[in-house]
Amino acid sequence: LLPRAAAGTVICALALTEPEADSDLAGIRTSARQLADGDYVLDGEKVFISNAGLADSHVLYARTGEHPKRGLTAFLLPRDTAGLEVTPMRLLCDDHPIGRLVLRGVRLPQSARIGEEGQGMALALGTLEHFRPSVGAAAIGMAGRALDEAIAHVSRRQQFGQPLSSFQATQLALAEMATECTAAALLVQHAAQLLDSKSDALGSAAMASAMAKLAATEMAQRVVDRSLQLHGGSGLLAGSPIERLYREVRALRIYEGTSEIQKLIIARHLLRPAKT
Image (cartoon, rainbow, N blue to C red; front, side):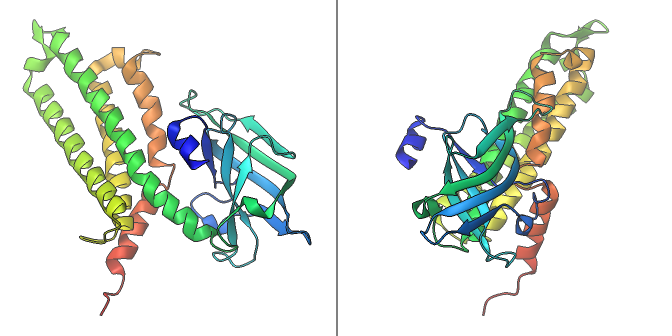
């Protein structure tokens, strides 16, 4: 499956979030009970699942034990599995494929289990650590586009007999936007390098990953908002590039861990007792 996913011939999805379990993974209630023949029967519901309806398979996390952390297990769930219902959900950025998975008596062979029972929490957290810089990279892309749109607009838009770009306030705004974009990009690159090298230099990779997502997504929100402000009323026109960016950028501060969760991860690493 992995070579085909890397080649883009199949689409995969991560099925973590539930109606009562998003930031709190220990709150997952989708159940997986093992039968005498070794197969598992899964029941539950997942929501806000990216690529739902498009994905050929899902990495789904379910509860195989009562312990909040050691009771989670990961499974590979194919799209055409009997008992799986997929329905779309609409978001503010409604061109993002997202949906709800409902599992009613879904039966999976033991070979569909990823790792051992109880390893789900560690697998999920490790996956999120790698996803967070990628969300940061998406944020940088959106912010960079917003900056480009702002530069183009203020260069051609005339006010009081001169282009908006000639006003000092406009120039100050552009300088701040560009500086924030570059700073966030360096932080994302740093986190990606630590994850690739499995290095703990200059703080753990987990903390760098959280910092990268926090800084880049919060930055992108500010830069896109500032770009829309520079556009004035034209930035609010439905279908314009900046209007679309304004809708799409908001979700980045929520999925793969909210900004508040990233701050808690960073603080936990900062306050961890030093190893002797």
